[in-house]
Image 1 (cartoon, helix red, strand yellow):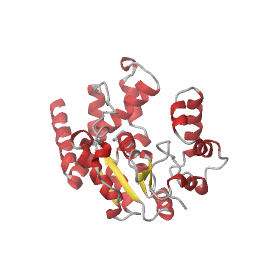
Image 2: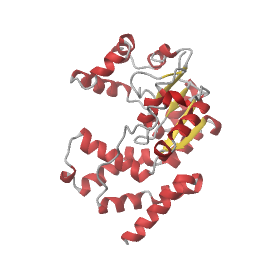
Image 3: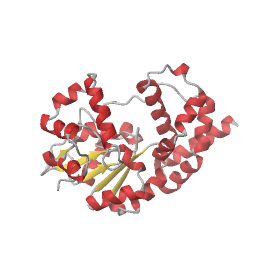
Image 4: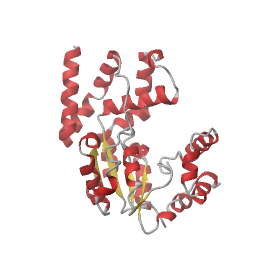
Length: 281
């Protein structure tokens, strides 16, 4: 069976596209032509259908040409999306370190994570953490400005809050709970936790730690041209004051928990949030 050797489980809007864009260049690593398969979160079939529609609109034709035709045929047109289908998608990487970059996996239920553990008990798990408030706001900007093509000025405070209050969005930013769910199935030494900030501040060192964790060559010259490339400019607009206050209140406990458990950048997130809440009082 050709299950992945590692999974990057997110979080969404925390640098997983940057990671994919770098690791796909590594000669000892193989990643699928499409970033996420979405098998274990149960959305593989609708995601595949959506991507096929976008391809028909000309959005993804370049990626089709770049990928192997046989892989694309198997991915897009197999009548089944079961375990055998999933593992067959990693057959081309046999003999290399195979992985899937699947940011939605961070918020899976324990039963879904247990299914991952049964299939690949020795898998290495990568998780990138981003300030929960910044992460969810970045996701809102993607949803409204990019996907829906809405002008920022046309979006109401209630619309922003309704989006951020969705269960899925809250779960993506609930890092501490997600980590505990994964730790209930995988030992700590199989999970590497990194911070979004290091993509901008220390990208080469971050990639070196990732390569060491995966057991592949950490010769950073292969990343020189891409490690510091800003492939995600981030939100073009700050949250309106009412939305910002709602977000700070909503994630105050989470920020303090992360600061206590991880220190480092998480302490800065919590301190900045407290200062902003005091300033708004």
